[in-house]
Image (cartoon, rainbow, N blue to C red; front, side, top):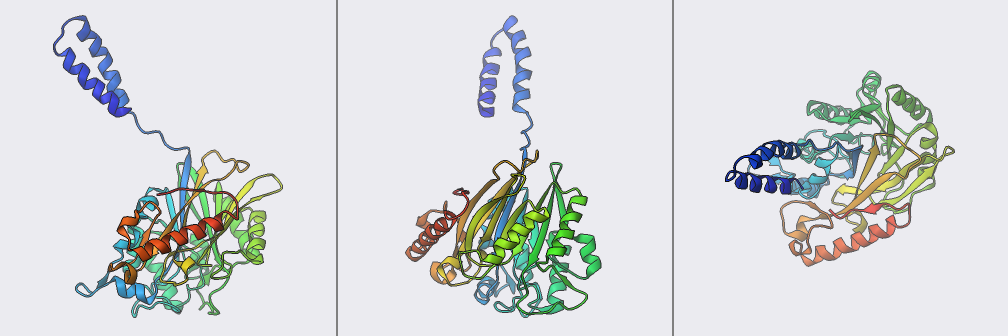
Length: 382
């Protein structure tokens, strides 16, 4: 419409340059009106858009593929070519950072230490919030935990889930971010850390009912309009949520959490709407799967991005405004390319080798089957 106004105004100006008198006077009145419409400020949305991505992994094959022998550095630019427009467009983009930045030697499974360039690439892709309470956060012990926190702090991003000590946690947790006057609280907890013990005075947020209740209370005291719990839970390599996940989801809602995003199983699990005693509706997705990894099971090779739009005028009795899009990870030893990439359904088959087309389509079908078993969420093709 704005382009139409612009064309009309140009035609009118050309015509009026050849006329005199009353028509010129009329044009003098009308022209500023058109210019005002051309310079209208875009209307602000009446919601805040959140985006959640799954497990950001770094296996040995990924580290090797990213290495540039000429510069001696690591390049992850290709990872987010098709995903960055979505994460950059969100008001707040959140990911599960399931590695440490423990320094050299860099290592994949089972004790992850990723190059610092990996963090840089994720930040460049538009992610703002990094979750670090997961089963791999102690892979490199005290050094890995503390260096990960420092690297994220130095780069100015929001990190939550692991802390230098109790004082650090008290100062930085819970996280409450403000956007368009709306305050949104973020919580993050893990079921465990692969049997590794936290070295004092470091702190890891484990799933604990009393701690969660206290954190929710503090979140509300900090003015949070919404509280989102990001949970590292469940069993690996299954599309089915377990009894503990269901129990904890109900506990979180009972304690005052509004919506819940799940990580850890490395596969997508269904969504659910929990309706509480006040008929308020709480969105839960039990797992959004992997983001980027080298895990070899067909349904590990990707995941979903979930978008959650939070109305500025809060109405928890309305259906949650939520959507998802899928992506499938391309492996260099199949694509012939140097690095890994994540392809969304909008990426044409023509740029992929036949084997990747078959795998991608099978993954998309499997994911849609899983999502159909839970609460309905609209799939967006991007």
